[in-house]
Amino acid sequence: MITTKYYHEKLLIGNAYEEDIANMLMKHIGFDIGLFTNVNDQYNIGESKRGIEIKNDEKIQEHLNIYIEYAEKSNAKNKRFVPSGILREDNTNFILIGNHDIAFLLNKSKLLEYINEYPDIYSKKKIGTSRGYVISLNEVGKMPEDVRCWTFAFNHKFLRLMMQNVPPSTISCVTL
Image 1 (cartoon, rainbow, N blue to C red):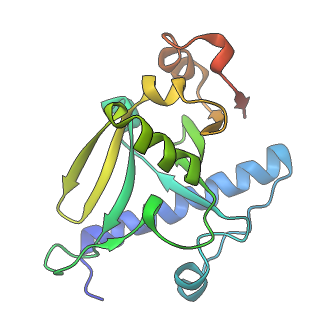
Image 2: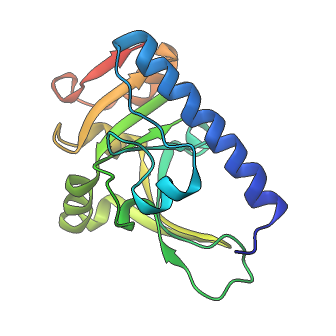
């Protein structure tokens, strides 16, 4: 597999974020997701023993949306995209996507159903090595509880900003 310096840097940042979130979940709610740290387990099983994939989305505040990847390639020169994220076939049941201020725990299969049922809630975005769905935070906040299972707030000010147009009855939140 041919990779670039940029890909490697983003991979290191993403791995550090995974570890941070896994440690926070263990410390605050006693939940061990069992992160896999070796490539063989990640490719053959998934990202964690508990079926949770953690994704770092550094641009949530800048763009006020989340980016759910569905295809990737490690280098723009590679010919083919491979299924990833929400379309990757592994043990992943949940995607925890966010940054150090806020994160959302999304049910992978229910999110796919929701995206297919409500195609107007997202747009598709193509970046050199990635393809994904872009969903506004306002739409994420409106998702039913079986799709958006939890919102983890690490920065309460940002949570209030994101949820200002969302009916309070639709919010399930854990503050850490």
